[in-house]
Image 1 (cartoon, rainbow, N blue to C red):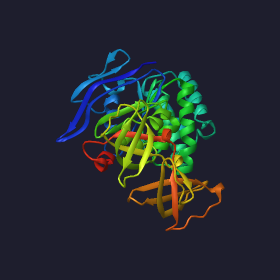
Image 2 (cartoon, helix red, strand yellow; image 1 turned 45 degrees about the vertical axis):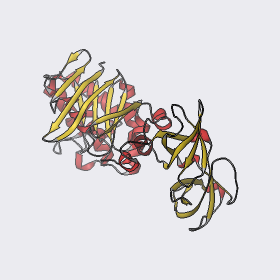
Image 3 (cartoon, helix red, strand yellow; image 1 turned 135 degrees about the vertical axis):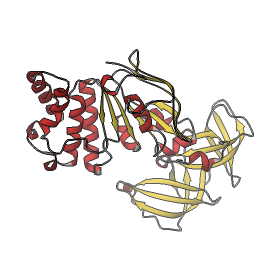
Image 4 (cartoon, rainbow, N blue to C red; image 1 turned 30 degrees about the vertical axis):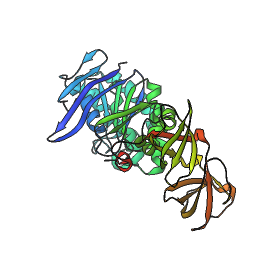
Length: 367
């Protein structure tokens, strides 16, 4: 099974730079997701790997083979699209068998391979059904089966679950990962859905404005994002702007906008540096108003939202900043708009970044 490698790949459409000097290595047998906001270039990268789009610059390798000039049909790649790529006039069996027949496989080989694949996607009891008799989830499974029935070892998936409702999407993404791992495929999956990427991926490559900004495992992307865009895009965060007043080897004292002092964990900062402190909602705790001590922030409830097992509480601090808290329903407190609250967090739970040169709002922008 091959690796996939891109080296300094770029693609322009007129004045628009869709992909900007992207280098990426996808390991043999890995499930890698290209994640990013709409228009960031992730689908263009996928099309370049498949051969459907030619790069303006750079090199694309499948294994040790340079494939820039290799036709789509000779790259040994299966492609699954967001919209169900099935023939409406053919049965499930005929759809899945179409590729192997085009390749000239024997009848015995086609029957053996197609039945094996249909069992893996759990459609062996629907082989005589036509597409108009299938659910959306079943249609996408047919698309998956078609992509892998020809023996492709690389599977490219472009928003494969985007047309499904939430419940079916949640079920099928687990099936998708199981299928890829059972078959030992190398999979590259494009999505803008952060939760989907976190569930299916071995590693995630986050893209923004045509570039890859970080590649890492889902846990490390969440806990060790490299910039403020990532901490806001992977999950959610609230932000406090401040200035470093004291800097130790692993601890910082930061003065935020109203003159309050907070303590956070951080390295590579100096006294006087402007910083942004990011707080995940699940790490901020609500305390009684009036308490004093380490990392206590005072404010008033601006909005609440019931989300299921927790209540999302938005608190406007005295200095005007907005902090989001996830308060477990088990705590049994009903928050009222305008209620005074004190918030606290542990120094180790804060993420600290140098203040971005382009400004915080532009650094957080999805465009």
